Length: 140
Figure 1: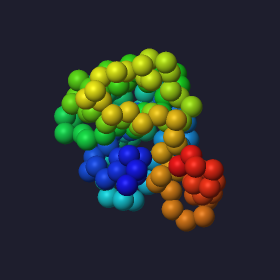
Figure 2: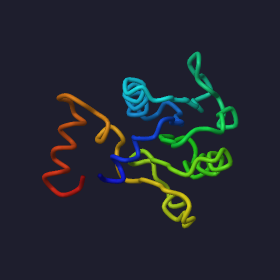
Figure 3: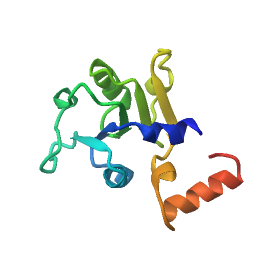
């Protein structure tokens, strides 16, 4: 099993969003469909009902975090999430920054350069087509 596939076996997830990456909403929906415990931190300033506004509001028993922000540096979110005990991160494709990729802490697992939905989506849609193409060209 690939690291990207195994990531989704965790029981609970924090999804950090600022509303700029639609894939975060699809990720939240798919995780909920799979029966995972999902905590959404909406850093847009206008979160929907039930969403947290700050990483500090997360409980300490969260297994993994998916980060899809463009208004702030995702590395800043990683630092705050580490304080909550989270060690496994998925940084949304095309939101990586040099600070994220330079993290050399051996206790931190960080998936970058991949869209979560390529590994979560089911049925016939743009994400599963992307997955098929990635498999054919050896980039899955």
